Length: 179
Ligand SMILES: CC(C)(COP(=O)(O)OP(=O)(O)OC[C@H]1O[C@@H](n2cnc3c(N)ncnc32)[C@H](O)[C@@H]1OP(=O)(O)O)[C@@H](O)C(=O)NCCC(=O)NCCS
Image (cartoon, rainbow, N blue to C red; front, side):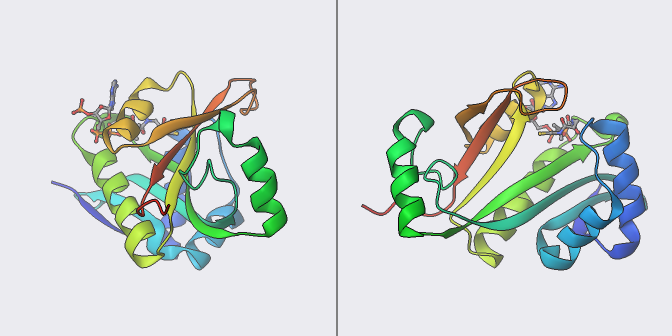
């Protein structure tokens, strides 16, 4: 059994360790602290027998890009992006910055539980219109997890990662689409 709970300041060093073990995208202490201080409801950890085994951290952004809002596919969005930007039509969206589970604890539903709670908090607590994330185009386990929750591949960002790999931007619309 494991439990999902909100992170505390004292969890940050262990979250940083999990991140270093599991992902090449690493951050400095202040980056984590800033997310926790500003969007603490969406900074989650998974705990099993008193050990931190995973985390998911998100922030809430103001965006006008219809792709990030889950309203358009990349190829039709160029003019809408320009128009939305000019109109200053900013809306609240969630950005899943990082999610990871320690290798020995994978495939038992912890990633699913972290993502389910993230979606719930970003939707209900922060009232965001969508949740988006970037993922390596070869990260099949993560892409499969996101697709199970209904995330769509909305855009490719060429050379997004520091080693040159491309990213998919994947988006989940949380609110009904208005006409
Ligand atoms: C992606 C990750 C968070 C999934 O965590 P997890 O706890 O193993 O996920 P779950 O056990 O809840 O699995 C949920 C679904 O994810 C997909 N999945 C997870 N691992 C997979 C794998 N090795 N191969 C294929 N699909 C996989 C499956 O669809 C799985 O559902 P299933 O078990 O019913 O087939 C984990 O693999 C991880 O930490 N990876 C390294 C960090 C990372 O890549 N993070 C994402 C960055 S964008």
